[in-house]
Image 1: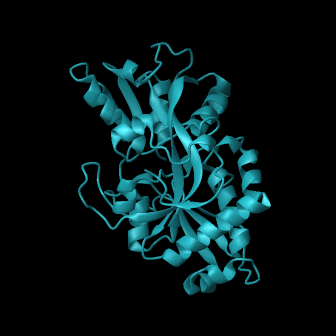
Image 2: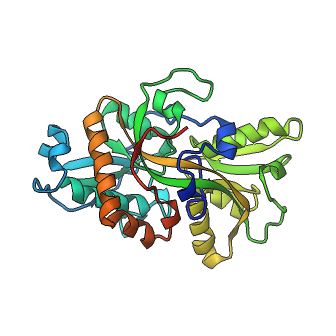
Amino acid sequence: MTASTTRRTTAARSRIAAVGAIAVAGALILTGCGDQTEKGSSATPSGGTSKDSSAPLFSALPKKIQDAGVIKIGTDSAYAPMEFVEGGKIVGVDPDIAEALGKQLGVKMQFTAGTFDGLITSIYTGREDAIMSSITDNKQRQEGLDDKGQKIGKGIDFVDYFSSGLSLLVKKGNPEGIKSLDDLCGKTVAVQRGTTYEDAFKAQAEKCGDKKLTIQAFDTDAEAQTRVKAGGAVADLNDYPVAAYTVKTSGGGNDFEIAGQQSGVGLFGIGVSKENTQLRDALKQALDAAIKDGSYAKALEKWNVQDSAVKSATVNAGQ
């Protein structure tokens, strides 16, 4: 999750813009809670069940992954429609894009569920080869910095594959009349812990000053949504595709609505170790190939997020 949300409208137009609330917030780096990818783990293969050495980009992969026939990918599978569990499998936009990449690479793309704030650590420990979970590519994460600019990790590289902006999710009918972040002063909000959305709320809390903004942070976005629905918080902050999907599906469309305009655009990236440049470059090549053959567009169209398409793969293009 990251710095944006307007995937359906603004996303495709500004792939590397830093963004309203997020730019102000100074994005958060995902470390701190340790490697939690085993917690509640669930895995599903994408892109086939066995390696295919005849695939166009199989030879571009590191020998270790060629031999294993699988790229292990960490994700937080509670973020529909981007990644969520259905029928015991992790499905969504990200797994479908990964499947398109897997066909180019000739290996299985195996997703394992974990908590969002433990994903980058899972790269550091080597538990996962990559992470793909609507993660905003930004300089802090690239350089391993916390929100105060202090070095807390090695940092990771990103292959950028999706563009998006931010939306406020409020209770149906918008009883508090929320139209922007400024309207939240003096109120209580709910948000997923360890995300740039939490950073955006923290930055807004500073702007609110004495008119205190109370932030309630939860392990999953689903918990934050529940808090808003129950009336314990006035808003949640999320990526537009996720917010729009929630509005459409929760309570048959009777639980939530989007308040105000989307704020800003940023890039989501597949995170890999800085020491594994061969895998990074292979994923970039695979994304470019999937864009060229139409399989990338097909994956986005399936979930109605085609406006968030990137025109080409980039590395560390986030601000």
